[in-house]
Amino acid sequence: MTTPPPALLIAGHGTRDDAGAEAFRDFVRELGRRHPELPVAGGFIELSPPPLGEAVTELVERGVRRFAAVPLMLVSAGHAKGDIPAALSREKERHPGISYTYGRPLGPHPSLLSVLERRLDEALGGVARTPDDRADVIVLLVGRGSTDPDANAEVHKAARLLWEGRGYAGVETAFVSLAAPDVPSGLDRCVKLGARRIVVLPYFLFTGILPDRVRQQTEGWAQAHPEVEVRSADVIGPEPELLDLVMERYREAVDGDLRMNCDSCVYRIALPGFEEKVGLPQQPHFHPDDDGHHHHGHHHHGGHAHSHAH
Image (cartoon, rainbow, N blue to C red):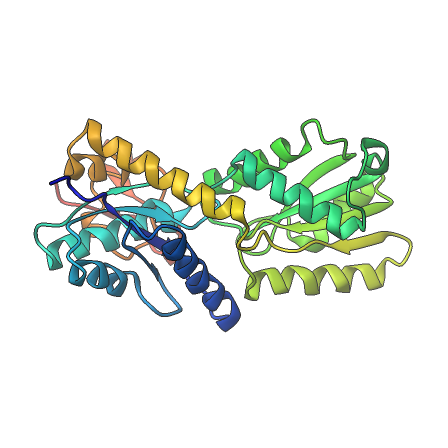
């Protein structure tokens, strides 16, 4: 008898927006329909049901022992680096005997860049825009924003890859929270670069409070600057490319499983030493202090860094 393939667990950010949460749940159901050979379940880190732990329990109740977890996130920030591994580590204690591997975040994959390009074409009102049509267009790619500089740099990487070879006058970046520049400042910057036409492109998978905020801020800015043509593009959405990409990340995680033991794999990918930081935002680096001890700074909390007993 052949061993069944590992199940697929999808991990989402969570949102206070019901439509956004429902879009995620729909997406998980669609993945399950497309892959009847795999048990598929999905849950959120925070804010919306079902929680990730409930999705793991659902898989375990279906007889699953091994799964691959894929973060349904464009960028690896605190959630993908810390919260999901911490949550999975908790689930392993609750369900002894399960093993799992952990996949990579989604972006900036070429197939997602082609969806973004399609969203820009739709916003510009054309089907096959030529480089000539695009030569006066500056795109403002707007990411979620993070206190993790590395995560913000990933949005810049996506912007650069989107610009390469597509003929836009430029692709600038802005963020909707926690990082500068914000949307109005990003739009001001586009104008300084000589923009006559700007398309604001949300770097988000599904509809939600933050993409709505991007659109509102864009419209507010546009009203104050009637001399500039500003358009808003749509989010990526549950496109076939996204469904295929999740399966690609699943297969990567499963193939990695063949090369190394699951447990060591999880600890390799998920920051060693996160166990005592369950639920705390992860920081990307450690700063030795004057006496050479490593302190772990949680800048979010405004307090001093706490040293951990080794």
